[in-house]
Amino acid sequence: MSENSSKFSKSLIVWYLEHKRDLPWRNETDPYFIWLSEIMLQQTRVAQGLPYYERFIEAFPTVFHLAEASEETVLKLWQGLGYYSRARNLHQTAKTIASEYKGEFPSSHTELLKLKGIGDYTASAIASICFDEPSAVVDGNVYRVLSRVFGIETPINSSTGQKEFKALAQRLIDTNRPGTFNQAIMEFGARHCVPRNPVCGNCIFGEICDARKMDNVNELPVKLKKQRIRKRYFNYIVFLSENDETRMEKRSEKGIWQNLYQFPLIETEAEVNSEELLKSEKFRKITDASSYDEPVPYNDRPIVHKLSHQHLYTKFWVMRSTEKFSDAVPVSEINTYPVPVLIENFISEFTPFKN
Image 1: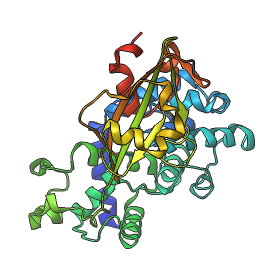
Image 2: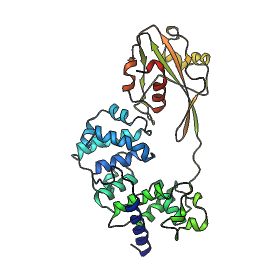
Image 3: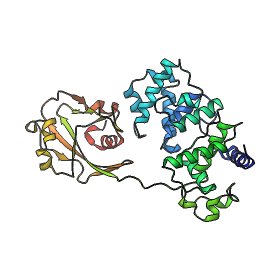
């Protein structure tokens, strides 16, 4: 390690040991707990992820418990955390660890990468924290710290930028305390070198920070423009029978909500009214309109649910029937199904579904 790299890592670790948050996985070296926390904190704030972590640990104290659980149980516990592919991959990898590795996680970055849902960042975190392998982590916090301190304007969401930042982080890592270094740089980015208006006046890197010298702290890191946001129009048909039953379907197609449950869905090209909905071919496929009352909108204006690359304009349509459904779901059991947060919010508000 060069002298400058050594100074950087030592300053960072000293700061971390004084300012780190007391989090339940911080004093752990068991790879199961580190893996679980890192997967949950991908694209999720600590404050939001912490209660989920605690519930998962209580429900699944070991990787064997997680492997033995049903996917629906895992998805239900994950409900509201978003990016559900993380939960599906988590469950699949738990099964792999339990059956093929006898409950023992691989100890190297290279072997960890072979597991489903584990990318470079998570593999580096587990390998360094649990097995002392000097493999540098690079996440949003690390990009921010390194781009500012070293004045790097290469876009972080380009292949060139990803390679450049990974190489720099690898040069800077403290090979004697790789796990501590990785946690330190992530914590520094999360708590001090924050996205907007960081407190540069008392920064440990104040004298060497290029962004501070150039007065462009808030312009770094650089990101390429995001892809165009897609607008989609969802119409959920909420059936209600006189027997206090409704209908739900499982999303089998690939996507962020794969294997979660929903009310029968009709997707349209634009917002529609009840007359347009009744004329829809998709509507006729899911029900015989003569058996039901006319659909009544629960919300007059669409609920806009924003995802990373798409915005969902959603209406819930209530349809009552005197007939029994062949695929009936008792209203009293509706809260046992794993559903997207969009539907969870509706269920919690809709009076007939309240327990």
